[in-house]
Image 1: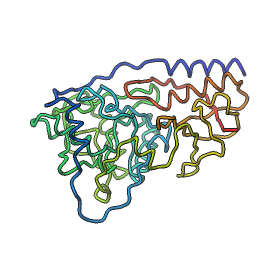
Image 2: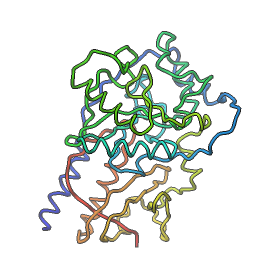
Image 3: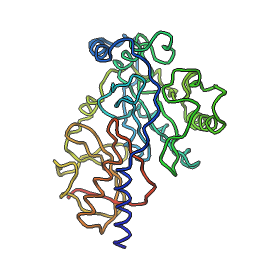
Image 4: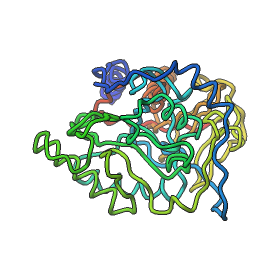
Length: 339
């Protein structure tokens, strides 16, 4: 029993360290330096909107299903601008859109696939950076900041598929964010398998109320996007508005994030955990405000195994910008609860 558990634990830790191949990336030559455009965008204001809108309720996707994968390209250099525009690798959607996305994800899992998220809610100032940086002949692939993007409303998502057996993204007829006709959903080129992947993604998303846009196979708008306002809140501010404190451990109870009675200043919880039965999902908010969704564990592990498994779970569940992990299909359940 102990030897088997130790072996599984070693495989889990090894999976964290195993680097996936660097992604292929489409790039443009920005019209002006990004640092200059960012400074201007942060000083600008979104367009004024008339009418009544629903109150925003942005939900972080990894808190709804830990099997959703993130590859937030805009938090690192692997994007069409070649430089980070987000400070944190996180993905949010308005709650109805997020819940619909989870349903599409579950449908795909029955077919051996999962969803890999590139982007969700996007602050308006980033939309302005994209527009100002992109040459006029390629602006069909970026939103006009004078109108705002559906990403700004928290009702658009950029994504692809990954295979459950490998944890790796599938091939599509074009690269993500590729600004060529190959990105069109009706593009006839590519391999039959690439087109099948593209259609499988579209079918799953459309079945849950998303609509694919005409020139990007990876971009889907949720049906209720008109009901939400344009937002310009940075990711690091979202944690503050949610009232979550750095260095605190939280768990989910239904749709609510609940704080435990004990404060845990060390996010790794090296001495403040005990193994319990059952299954819990814990959200650790690190001192800089970044969340890590922890998967669960099994009673009977030693303190050393507890510590190693918890660190492995944190590394697997939260992937900082620029860092990619290949997760092997290892079955190891560890559950933690604070004393």
